[in-house]
Image (tube, rainbow, N blue to C red; front, side, top):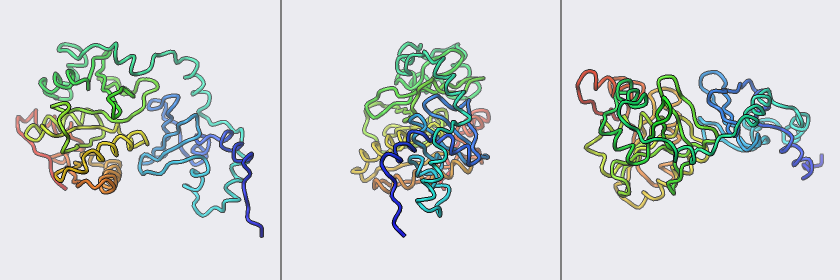
Length: 324
């Protein structure tokens, strides 16, 4: 039998006419509108699987692994035993099929007149005592005032309307995204791209130790309990996902650290299944870049480091992270 070949015209028709979102819906995933933007659609299946669709439906990645690609890769990802001819035939039948999320995405496009995140960040106010954001961070989240003042001065936090704003920056320090957290708020500014939230007690100090948490509040909570080790440490957060931009940012940091014999990546992800998956990915990234790694668990059986900080603050005791 002659080997099947996909013509360039048919390949172009499939890649432009079949959305990864529609494919994920076929495999039982549903759009999480609260966690999505028009350029980054978050799809979930059950409690443990989360996929991101980007590039106007032409790209995807699995937040629980490093799997990513186009629509052809997505079919092979879920059906690895399918023959190439059948993959192409299957996708050909889906050309022009809209995903269930299309009406929502179109609504977002029509109503999105917001400036880019970097421009909105530049206009946000410095974090200051007495605001809703300050009270939320100090009273609800138990972050110490000295740390918040430092994070505000370093450009890691600003004061949004009834919520704290956390910056995500690339290697050059440019704002790529902003996450809002408050008593009733948990979302990103529109068009945000999650690279890394970054906090360093002494900015521009060479980084020997890199601490990676999931949420900015957890990264700051770790820093609050880590004062003795903080001088050459950079605390970062991935925003709960490990997309290509985040992985690239981590690789850049590890590459810069690799020539230091004392360089160390500390995994500070949550004590749950997603946290364990992220930890495995971080171990692999450290190994690939020749940097030693270890995992520290939140003390006292807490799920994350902010929960551990709250317990330590309310009990007036000092807690050290627990090594794996």
